[in-house]
Length: 242
Image (tube, rainbow, N blue to C red; front, side, top):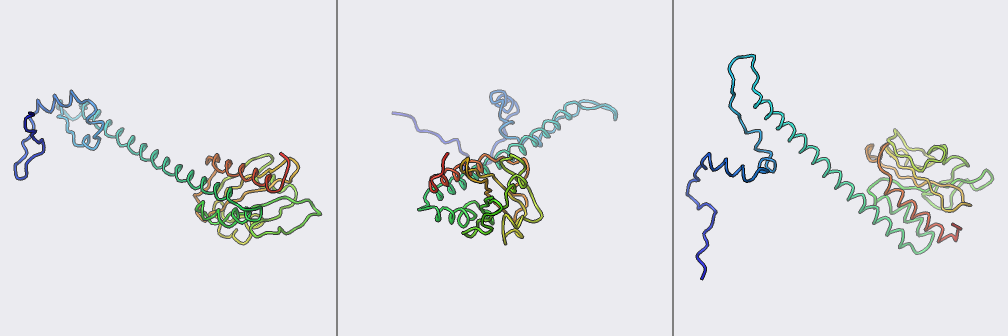
């Protein structure tokens, strides 16, 4: 028969007894990570000054202040990393949802509808368009809304020769790329589309009224994944060669 287990929780109404200094010391020696795990306690430390005289520095106090500053810096860094991780996870979730929506298209026309009508809401932005280059004697107007015809060489001019993408903040979007929604665009992500060697180049254009949504130096892996999937779906529906 086991003995009755006693609770370590303080009883209501019973004042807590301050721990002995030696007990605190022993606890900290046995748990050296305690202050690291509880950094909010560091600013409460008040090491006793061990000097006299105005021109003598107390190294203990200096070290303590520096440790507190370092803990604050590391906390801010950790919070930034966590925020970035959450943002990346949310972006991945949106891209995966966009990919599934495109894969569920019933035919090519429905795929174009999904890209130019549904992806903006799925990705949490304001507009998504498709652009395709056409030779000088080709059509000047695309057969579907949200699709725009560009003159030959325009993709290289917009992205840069051979560049795969361009992310940046803008004062206004390019009307040739975004159509009437160009006035709303304050940041844009433009990604080259090359469905097949024999087809003209195109653009996947994403625009947001949030000037910080897309910016230079931002990672493009997720957008490239979405674009490569789009190219494969175009090849499948239009029976294009690889």
